[in-house]
Image 1 (cartoon, helix red, strand yellow):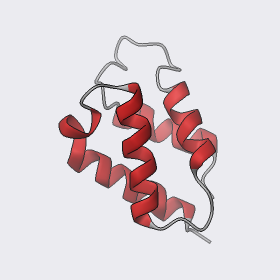
Image 2 (tube, rainbow, N blue to C red):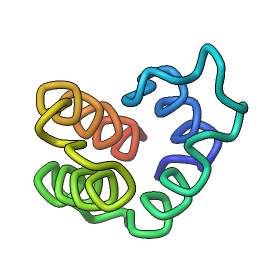
Image 3 (tube, rainbow, N blue to C red):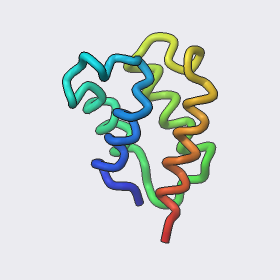
Image 4 (cartoon, helix red, strand yellow):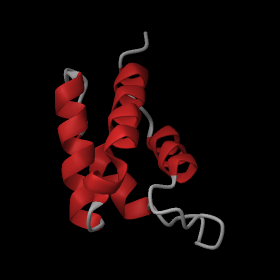
Length: 85
């Protein structure tokens, strides 16, 4: 499984809204928490992607349209970390 801290760091580094240079350190806290709460150990990549896309789209208008390739990459990264042994 992935820790909240690792997941939060992923979103802070990815910075899908490109605001981290002037935003508070916890800018993506709600997004991270909601995604973290929805992840579970037996998810496949498509399920992880669906969570990231759905939650991201809820919090930010045009999230997927503006970031589709990045969203897929981040979902894959999260999936890979979740499945590390």
